[in-house]
Length: 422
Ligand SMILES: Nc1nc2c(ncn2[C@@H]2O[C@H](COP(=O)(O)OP(=O)(O)OP(=O)(O)O)[C@@H](O)[C@H]2O)c(=O)[nH]1
Ligand SMILES: [Mg+2]
Image (cartoon, rainbow, N blue to C red; front, side, top):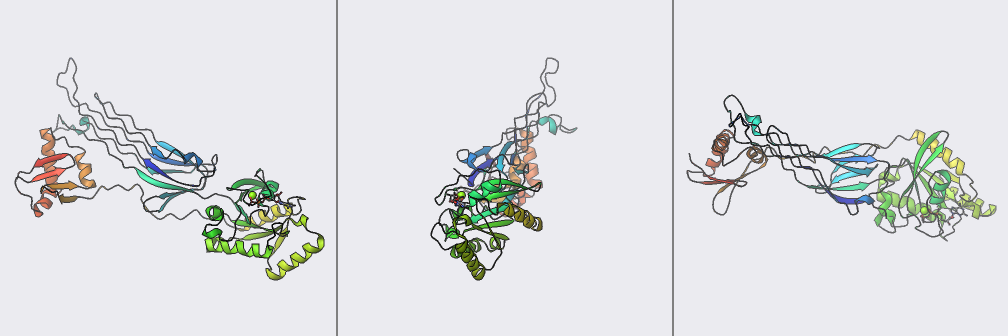
């Protein structure tokens, strides 16, 4: 089965909590703070590899969670960093944010890496907070919590050349003649069910050819298999357009040629602008007279240059390779997909929200508050004093007062609830 679009879930590791601890040894019953730092959570990293050509591996495996950072420990022991989760994808994989549908990465080259999500930072241990005025801080910081996000992986095959044409036109046969690929060939339409890649070598140079399942009328609207696979020709630099001039499937070859071009145009006007080499295929099946007549008709009605080929006798095959190489040398590589500046991993660090719950309590939230309370331990009086002082300094008490905060009002922040006193 060929799979070229999947939705998967990603999550970077949470940061480990910093530790609150004090040195206790036989010699020092009440030693200084020795709580170690929490480890950082692992990142979510994508790597493009030539070793894969489909997204098949993602059929059942859809959740990729990096390891959490370990909590810090006593005696300044730092928690270990969580392991990254490294996701291998085929070259040509485009990653979209499932929510906004925006492209966040285009991994078009072997070995390309993309860090989609950064792990949460580990929290500081209480040893970190020790200072000349604060000899024994009884608080430490919790690690940053990360959220899971969904992305869509979409494979847009990377090839220099795409073979397009009606089913049975001889595309796979040609691919097997000009490249190292060994595609399935058979005398019925839709033999090729997913794009095959082959490497063609000519004059010491190489290019990659993609054999696309046959297109039919309406392909751009989802008829046949075509529409589904047209995205694999989006990025080719050159199209080899095969037309069965023998009309072995009892269709009109001029019509075939026009229909394919119309479908390309309908799918994407840009794709229709991709340079083409027209190949009139299966010429061995026609007697000289008929071939001459049909070629004359093509020249008259279409009037574009073409090559005659036969996968059976190899007629024109060498010429196809040479012409393709020559054409490619004049066509610049297609640029990677443009990526809008969009911070997929953006975290809310600035917002402060104040709401009232059913009982009239003031509920504080937002990224700035979340970050701040990571270092607060309510059961510790000094930590709580620091907490109140910081609320004052951040201007939050004033903001609350503007909304009616009075002596005795209840304030809630995450799982902290306290009564405000002036
Ligand atoms: N005589 C002759 N037969 C050919 C030639 N090229 C292909 N064929 C035959 O035509 C049939 C279809 O060829 P394929 O290469 O599978 O065609 P395709 O375009 O890949 O078809 P789909 O994968 O179905 O889209 C097979 O039976 C081939 O053997 C040719 O040049 N001459
Ligand atoms: Mg085929």
